[in-house]
Length: 487
Ligand code: TRP
Image (tube, rainbow, N blue to C red; front, side):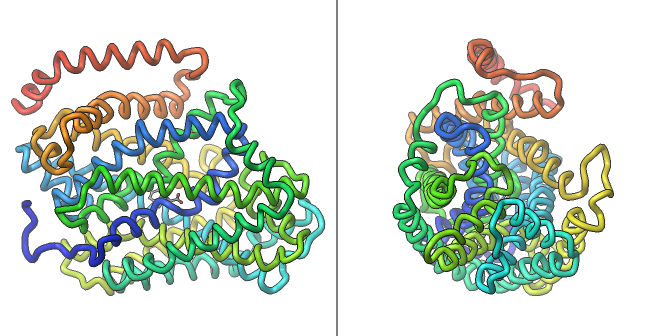
């Protein structure tokens, strides 16, 4: 394709992309967020809706992103520009790439702070800094950990440094090499932790909680959270997967690889649930504790058990590694863009990115102490980063990409790049044209507070709307394309 200069570097091994993309997908989202939102929104029913969101929105968007990356062989900005130019469309569409790259960077700015919590808890577990006898005492430990900007900043600085060192070493030597031992290590630790959970006495309750479907336990809010989380957990619309896709060899199947990544990501999230909830239930704690589940309830639960400190440390080591394999994916887009467009070496591009990242993440870190009152419309800087990226930029970027692929670009482009048989191709097209956009629009309607979407009450309306839009869309889409190309 239109890539200029020397051919783009590719993953070295057969599993390179798969490991790196799974490393990106599996992170704090799976181990920290998924269990606590599952706890908050009622267990099994939530898990089911989440799976549907992954299949209906996550997988089609991810396939589209990888196809953009491999077709355009570049950072999100360059790749999208090349692919749209190939169809004779305006380079303005590469604004989607700009937004995605910015989004990945913004996510990382607050992600390193949370990853820093994990590293500091690993340290505390090993050195006995987590001794406590009640959730309140644990909350005090957590509070003290956040209150000191020097230590908290130290931990997030460490995460930033490790990330930039790995990325600075390059795609094959840095990213591919590190994920090739961190990912298997992570799975091994998870299996050990589930084994520990099996003997804790709370395993049956945990299985019941995660997998038994209690209809009626699910709120519309829960459904929306499931949809939003599908984007976050698969690292979508933030340049990470697109850039990794730009290193994917031509002969790899995008459909099959995407499904494997999505399945692996989901399996790890469920396994994390199976590692955490038995310990929580065995100690008679509340699964719906919220964000504090991992940093307050869990350390306390571990300590109450024989060998708990050892397994607790293992848990935070696993969490830290999962966070690191994700954070490297979030800067890769920016680093690759700097190398391709500003003639920088990988090392200098990584250091430059790292310095800017450090400055912004320091501001995010300060939201927990000195800057807790620096709020705008009730949100501090950390909250704003989270809100803007997960409520607006990711859905918007995803929407832009699926609409481009579904309606605007020449259909040969994606037919060729995805290389699917007619039936799966039609299925993908139906998803990117109608199902994913409608799902994303629901996120916006909610974020704007225009209307309280109640899935339970409105599903017939939503379904009718979907069919209507699809019928009308199919009727006018050739004309739509003509109208767009006439400009
Ligand atoms: N998917 C990762 C997780 O679940 C986080 C992540 C990695 C991410 N890259 C991203 C989130 C890009 C948003 C955008 O923890």
